[in-house]
Structures are given as C-alpha cells and as structure tokens.
Image 1 (cartoon, rainbow, N blue to C red):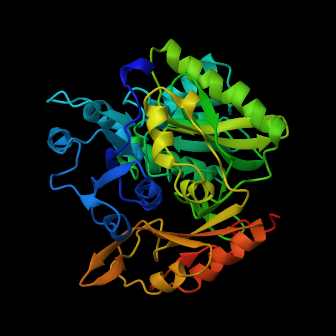
Image 2 (image 1 turned 60 degrees about the vertical axis):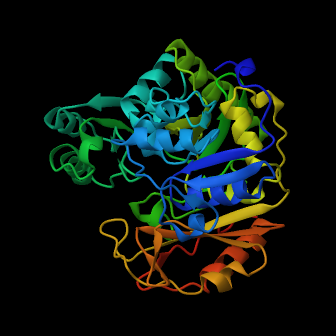
Length: 440
C-alpha cells in the first residue's frame, strides 16, 4: 500500500487488538488512552487486564477460521488492526485481516507472512544476514539429527543450538557441556520438545558479551530506532538456569551508546530492510534485533518481527507521544510524519512466573495484591498468564505478569518495580531479584 493510498489519518479509529499476553495488555493500555481511539476490541479474550480496556470479539480467533475474524472486522467497520504476538504473524493474519470482503478500508500493524519469516524461520533469517553481510554468529543449518550431532562432535568448542521455528522464546539452548549440546539436538529433532519448530535447527558459534535488544519501527522505507532495552532471559539470579521467554527488562540501557546505536542502524537494521526488499518483501511493523555486544562490535543473535515481551512494557512506560498514531503511521507507510517523544525517565519490568516454569508451569492459583501494587506511585501491572475464575484472578500460564516501575533514575525505577512485586502473591511464584541490578 503506497503512502498516498490511505488518505488522512482518521480522527477516530475503530481498532482490533490481536493477542492476550503482557505485551498486549501494555499495548491495549496505551491504545485506549489515545484520543483517536473510538472503539477497541480484543481478538483473544481471557486476559482480565485487556478485557477491562477492550470489548471481546464474539467470534473465534484462530488461523483455521480467520475468515470469521475478517468478517467481524467488516461488520464492525474496524479500520485498524494491531497484531502483537509472533504466531499469528507467522500464520499470515496480517495478510488476511488487511483484506475486506465488503470494501472496508483497513490497514494492519504487523508484517506479512513472508516478512515474519525473519523470526519464524531462523534458517531463512540467517541466509538473509549472510547475503547482506550483517554481522552475526557463524552457523550452519541442519535437518538431519545425525549430521547435526556429527558436526558438534567434530568441534572442540561449544556451540549454541537453536530451533529454527517459533518456540515461545525457549528454543535456544546454550550448552555448558558437549553432552548437553548433543542432548539439545535429540530434544529438538527427535523428541520434538518444541514441536515442528525443531524440525530444522541452526547450530552457531557461542558469542560472548552483553546481550541487548534494539527495536525499530519501519514502514518498509524509513526506520525509527527506539530506545535500547536489555532483557534477562535466564530463569534465576545471576543469569543461571534455563532460558525463558524473559524474566525482566529495563529501558534504556547504557550498554549501547550513540556510536553503537548508529552502527546497529547502519550495519544491521538498514541492510536487513534492503535484503527484504531484494526478496520483494515489504516489511511494516517492528524490526527487533537481539544483539550480543562483543569486543568486535554488535552481532545479531536473532531477528524478531514484533515487540518483545517483556521489553515492550518498559519501552511503552517511557513513551510520551500517542502510540495509536505512531502504529498507524508505520502501517500506512508514513513513518516520516511521526512525532515521537520519550520521557527522560528509566523503566524496569520484573516478570513473576508460575511454579515449575518454564518446564511444566502449574496454574490455577489465586493471585492477590494486584490492586495494592497498581496503586503504588510509578508502578504498572500487566497481566500475561492470568485469567478470571469465580471472581478471582488466577494463574493460567508460565509468565503470569510483569510489574513495571518508572522513575527518575534506574535505581528508583527498580525499587518501585520490586515494591510492586512484594505486594503480589501466588503459590510457587518465581521472581528474579537482580533485574537491572548495578545499573545506574
């Protein structure tokens, strides 16, 4: 869709939000505040935080019956759709919901199915990076477990093993022993612990340094780099334990200075957009680069095609301008018109997870203290793996909620986040106590 195809930005928008996690709760909160938001629907009801802000759709929202959601959009004159999670993007919901059976003009924030391959298919992404000379870890793609194990056994150093498909942020194994690496191959390719995501794997060199996340908005032509974030993937303090979808994040991070950010834009983000264009892929949405800051400069660990969770929460806590306008301009191909302002404050998000997460999370436990935490100054609580049952809020997933603190300094933001955490209780909860520790 060309820039001049969409006309003026609507004064009032009828918006559909897809997704029901903590990221989507934060998005719903920001969208609902916009003066341009006339009506907000949620395509995946069940999150009490989102349900308090948006009206649930009255049709199924799944890939097999996506036509029913498209019909809902037509019948209710939805003119803007925001897709949060990676799965519907990979399944082509952006393509489907942009279409209208009744001629309704509708645009979608979120990349097409082809564009979402940069996250949904790590082998495809690695190929693009190589072709564009984007700095990344050296790696090889395997579809045969025996060849993959033979490769590992022929090497003296340890390699990282990644499921090529979507695995909810858990499909990356950083082994500490050769045996662990071989077991990861069997788990992914033979035992299929990540389902179809592990049919193909990527084995790549283990990089050393500080991890950081750079998220950018792009309309396929312009790139707007957002303030850098840093997340904590491991389950336990000191970056110990298994990888998770994320146990906390903070924004901004001092790990990336202005010069490094310029390098990331020049050598990583812009070349990836150029590579996508060479494949005749128009990418509109969030281009997320997960980086390792090595002694030789930033290296790409992975690309994602959506806001990170939990990086989205501290990022939006600092956003001062209108999110709905920003997302619409991105999707409409008019990002150069955006007025983007962030508060000169720090934000820290701490994730509270269920007992036995990430292996087999226990659910159904009542959560208390949510209102008390939300009343604290500078504190926001976003629900993720939580639902309402019998008038109570109970756990329903692995990462249950995120508590975000906003403060003048990182220390104040961290203190506020943990003050909120300390007022919330549910059985077996897991919380890291070192999110943003030592950051000024």
